[in-house]
Amino acid sequence: MATAKTRQKIVASFLSLLGEKGWHGFEMADVAREAGVKLSVLRAEFPGKTACLRAFLSDIDQKVLDSIDPDMDDEPARERLFDVLMTRLDTLSPHREAIRALRKAVQRDPQLALKLNREAVTSQRWMLTAAGIPAAGPRAALMSQALVVAFARVVDVWLDDEDPGLARTMSALARQLDEGEVWMGRLDRVGRFLKPFLTRARERGTRQDDSPSQADGREEAGASPSAA
Image (tube, rainbow, N blue to C red; front, side, top):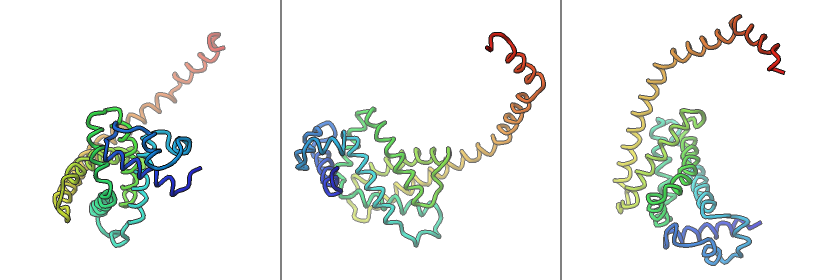
């Protein structure tokens, strides 16, 4: 098993090649040469590029989670999430060229886009958790996916934002979070509207399942020769 230092060196080499040559411009053998490790070591730790990318995103998640500002605890959820996502962008800053190359690749490769989306959803669930927003259940799953899309739009702005203060990026993030709040509010209202109807439907289904005719039918079916 490779040491943590060797794993870090492999991921750093992967990111360097990604930024220089693009996703399809290098092979895993190139990563091994760049990192100065044997192919057997690379295979044991990272079977492919997606595994390298997963390790990179996990490392970014860890750094963001380690950087949670306790002074934000009393702020509204939106402000906490804004702070977490800006911290994520700050953490990604040293790898801007790799991110740029990755964005170009997913725009041309739908299969890669699907792979990246799965990894990104996991990361954004942790960003919600970091912001103190519940990240479990159907609503959170929808929020995580929506946040992946919103953050990707912000990243597009961030990649070309040369202002040290990232004014355009912060404006884009604020706009995306505002739009997200509007859509989640609409979904919540629809959910509250539909809840009584869904409850009645479930209750009606339960009564029908427990009715005498249904029970008799099940008994007769159990006694028939075909049930043997």
